Image (cartoon, rainbow, N blue to C red; front, side, top):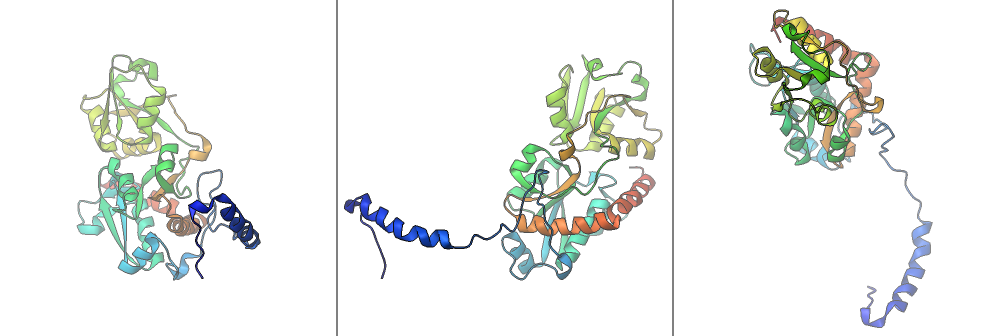
Length: 310
């Protein structure tokens, strides 16, 4: 028999009904949460991914299982993690350590992979609105990103938390020795990057600040005199300078802007609430870290990018 309560009968009947129901509700055994986010801002468990997508998959995992395709957003201009080999075509042209990880995640899921290239500023929006399932694009942790999307464990850590620095023309080494020397000069950073937020928080005395769509555009802007300095990821900048010894660029010695330890490490992103998907990704990250495979890919694609002059 259905039970209904008329508002005109007052609150007494409702309270009486609640009194009857509450003991039963409290008597129910509370289940442990399946996914736990810890103080380091990532899901603190992993699943065994060797059997592929779980049969009881929910959310986007269920759709990936049904369609048989994992869609991954990336900005493919950040070697050695993601870049384009102009000698290849189609999906095979997207190469780099992150792209190898994307392929392994799809393999562990038992589905096909589709790399979806886009501007860096669009990468997180693509997972937030469900256009893509994951974003793998050298994404550092920021509180703003964590509020917008789900972030995985860190999978790539720069040596000694290298952090961010200032890239200038080597010929300006005596003129620009610190961030204070940017007074009256033009500064650039990649739009949507960690370095963009660092500039907003820590550097004030430039003449003009412009946002570039890719890190390679930042390097080119400084090289060609359209900018005097670029806020950059130190590790990536060092790799570019090494791979392009005639580029005429240098990092300002002693300028190193680092983030808090818990923010270190590149992350994979998924739509907010898709913890099962991040749980699966974490298992693949655990596998890569245990075998040191990601670090090996990183070294291999550094050499690969050097041959292409990237």
